Image 1 (cartoon, rainbow, N blue to C red):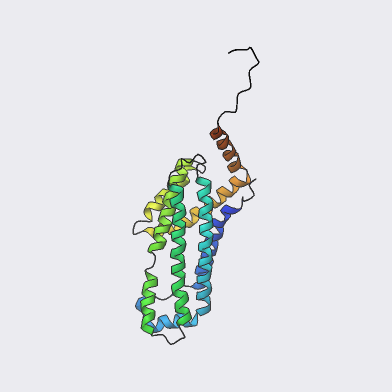
Image 2 (cartoon, rainbow, N blue to C red; image 1 turned 180 degrees about the vertical axis):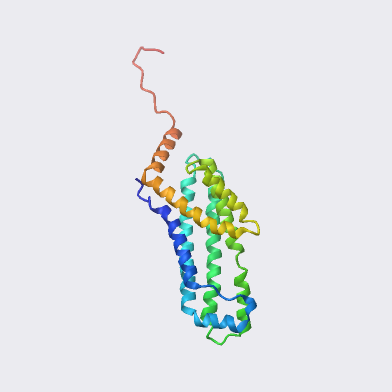
Length: 230
């Protein structure tokens, strides 16, 4: 059993912590609802909003960890894995940066709500937060699409998991990309569990040893007795 068999479980922890951050932070009013209501929301819920923002950033860090774990699992030891594993990891980085930006805006608004800042500024910031999903959408779409292609190529996970990821990744670039975000969380949990069970069973190590032996080639031939010819 691998010593880091638990590493894929960061995917499960990511989804769980993300859900908790949403529950704690709550849903802010829309920018159309006016400055007074927006300012009141951030004044009345300052602590919860800032805790929720901090939890979402922590969840994003777990997603990066999971992305690194998945990238390593899908790499071909022979170096024939193409660029897909690198792209899936890049997708987690983009997603994490997008999540940090998404958390920074409400955190700052909650901090400034009782500082006498012009209420109209809150309307502008709220409008920005309502539409700052592009980095998140891009990161999630790249992560799912590249993960699916890697699974289909390497075959260490069921191929249907690869097809689902590719489908969700393509959906992520469409106006219904929110489906990819929602279903992607379920996909991450499933992959986390599959990889963890595989690691505990020693499948990764066995596969790696076999591949290394294949790459090393046949061992040296035994010396022939003197005078013996083939």
